[in-house]
Image 1 (cartoon, rainbow, N blue to C red):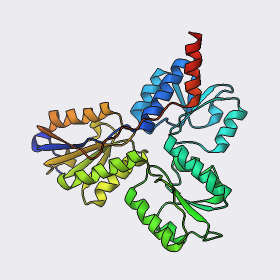
Image 2: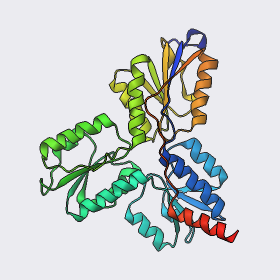
Image 3: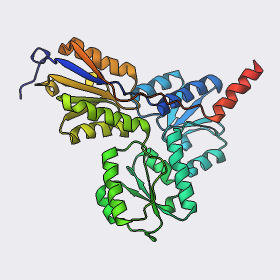
Image 4: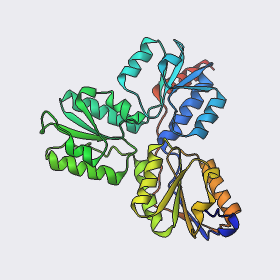
Amino acid sequence: MTTSTPSQIRIEKLVIAKIRGFCAGVVRAIEVVERALELCGGKVYVRHEIIHNRYVVDELRQKGAIFVEELSEVPNGSWLIFSAHGVGPDVVAEARARQLKIIDATCPLVTKVHLEAIALAKKDYTIALIGHRDHVETIGTLGEAPEHMVVVGSVAEAEKISVPNPDKIAYLTQTTLSLDDTREIVAVLKRRFPKLGAPKKDDICYATQNRQNAVKAMVPSVDLLLVLGAPNSSNSNRLVEVALAKGVKSRLIERASDIKDEWLLGVKTLGLTSGASAPEILFQEVVTLCKDRYGVKTVEEVETVEENEHFGLPYELVKMIKDKGAQA
């Protein structure tokens, strides 16, 4: 196999998505950890990666955050932050039993899904939870009402599920799913269960939708789409899938150094976007590489919608900030 060299590759244009990178929930989650490190006066533990991005997690680790997967790794009485993906009530109960001081960084849009699950379970509904069963967000949501929920991860699974009362079934979704895939699953559920209940407002978050729609706007004009994001980032992987579904080659990368020359053979117009947990500094690292290594002279930004969402800090942190201010 012939290995390409940069001299064989000359990309004429780099097309980038204006809607990219951090969403409001990610900005909030990172700020929660940073403010907690300032205010808690000691070790701060974080259950699971606060967001799915190695670069961000490593930066927070260098500042003093200690990331764990199990509560058993956290000493009794310590400060504990729940990640943006949310946790089930069993985890909260265990943390309280261990007298851990909890700061909840769960994204408000994930909390919305949890509250919907609780409300439906109280009405004795079966809940079809559309999502990836091994994803931490789905695991957390499932924990709210496991006896009432069935996880549906595909059209095939939607065709097979059975429920005790077909008149009392509703669906909820993981917030970072593919819009198109979810639409197909919901269509099957509606056909099978005509009285299927739906969320009052779409569970798939605004940032996930916006980034997928931006990819759809970009792909007609690019030969290859690079998506900056972590391998375990659901919303980043969905961006790759959106491009592939439109017939455009796409690759997921964590850093500029992941790009392989052979991917770019024959590519004249390269597309670039990033998932909701990828920092802008890494995005610009890719842009710089494309200019320096592959001769990109023209960078075109595709604008779709504006984002101006902002989520406030958890009440635990707000109280700590107020108390500190009162003591000053």
